[in-house]
Image (cartoon, rainbow, N blue to C red; front, side):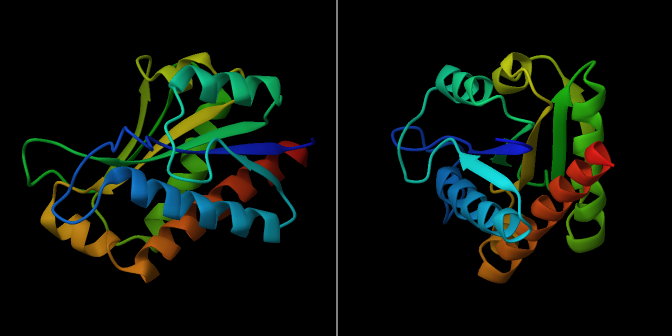
Length: 182
């Protein structure tokens, strides 16, 4: 498939991810990923998810899936956690040394800056995230907010805000794809 985007709702099944007071990370990740998929398909993009229901998919299977499908981009959706409850906001990671990964992260971040009233922790490069390291295509890991921060969790708990996040991710991906093909 041309310009195939893999959306990866992090965690799932027996792996709940971070735990807020109300939400489990895996639930929020899937909710947003399903909407990103719908929005990108409405824009005429080809999209597959690493999971569409609450199941556990090992990291290596997520990577194999993206690599075998010859994805153009891989976007993993997550929510952050930290022992310090004042930590808040979004951040986007790409694999250190990946110019296209950096451009994809910047494109999504530019939409976050416009649409999200959350603390901007910025774009960061990293070598430790397995899915960023092992995917062949440009890949980013989006940490939407800290569900261990009461204010962030309350904000992301609103369906309209989750929709806003999904729209920002989808538009960021779409704009990045447009630049690659122009």
